[in-house]
Length: 627
Image 1 (tube, rainbow, N blue to C red):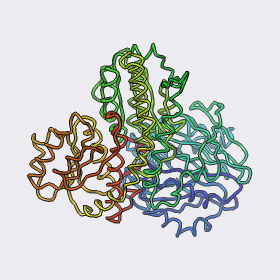
Image 2 (spheres, rainbow, N blue to C red):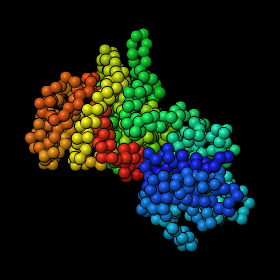
Image 3 (cartoon, one colour):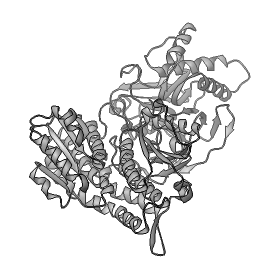
Image 4 (cartoon, rainbow, N blue to C red):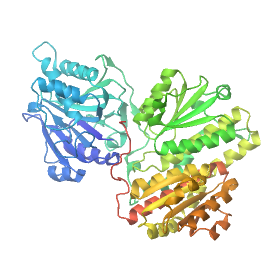
């Protein structure tokens, strides 16, 4: 959730830190700060500000007022202690002997705080991070006066800290007596090292790739329980026992321009329009042709046709939109492959003590690959010995590394908090898995498989067609921007897409919104329908069309204002609804990929009409890295 940036090199650090933090604003935050060490200064300088990053930039003249070539920066999302300058990072110990930034949560911070207070330490904030900072200071102080070098003392202190604290963390650390040296450590929170160009001549740390892309495309992914020691000229990575290890350098295949708005007013609208390309990039590499026959190649997963044929049950696990993608995946997979499939919220999965079949396959879905609950569920499954497959977007992320196999969605960087293209590529990844599984199990013949593949390959062009009609959605959104309650209804796959449409609306427009299986309306929900309430009815499934329209008629008779979403040709819906949006026809199993686009646009345009911050909605973060 929080953002970390660090730099040590030959350039002034503060402007680099601020630029990196700007590229991490999408993660969500309520305060920001930097700490920079000038080699000629007696101690590290710390500057913090409550609110948006622009406040910190004004205080530091965009970093020019803070001199020094080594430093760390942070954007904080409040967990322990209210948003304030005192609670903002970086935190420091007496005389700035240790300065630290932290992403994650220290679960035993109260225990550590009480122990340190008995030693005479005084706390200035209510944060769990300050407990980690002062604990590190105590360990570092204990090692002074011996024969250890400054680096050995620092590594020993960090090692002891990592053993003592419980929770998740990514740490950026400066020691007052080691100018020009930047330390980092991580457990369950993302952290990378950037290897800067010759011009900048140095190293960076960051929570996510966009923070370093303006300076380098070469990164090292720091693993769990690993420590980095960085200087302008050297990079050393250690395991938790302080033994140096080798880590490969990975070249990021997309550049900083991919994380820019490219003329769009918001990242969300840019990413909505990138969906045709993202869907094509997800599908095309996995659909091969041989002797004029197309087939799906998932060899990257290591799952052979024999393996797939032997799968007894599939489990899908995700949070938020990833969970909604799984709800779609379950229907498609069960209908095509006739394999039972269970879908779980990652935050609930572990706590129901799941019974996992030995020949089962657990698919973990995550945009960032760092989602804390999903990662914890993955580790539980690995302990149980069940085969795991990750469907993620971020290369080298924790979930990608720890799963038995990974299927990347290739959506590219997604900056807006509200996911659009990442969700759409997750859908396509699940389509591919379902069709491949159905083929391996002999549940579909070659003709059916060929038709499904053709329909999938046609999705990008059909999404383009939906986008070409966005002005109609904008007109309707402007008309409905003042609504207070919205209900999304559908059946089968249309219910699954209603879940995603409702989430999109509530997270960026702050309008109360709920999704219901349409058949459940009369089991209580219809009591909430009154004059002027907006009901969005999704009816893309031919077998269920009449039933959904009937449910919408019930809502209209109680005063609801109806938005109908269906496929071309289903014009009878206009006799019931007040406003209709049509999407191109496709195989009904894939209609979700088209129907979601107008719902994304509806949420976007309503948020714009209300004058809200579309890309950075209140109280939300892009990557949820703590439970």
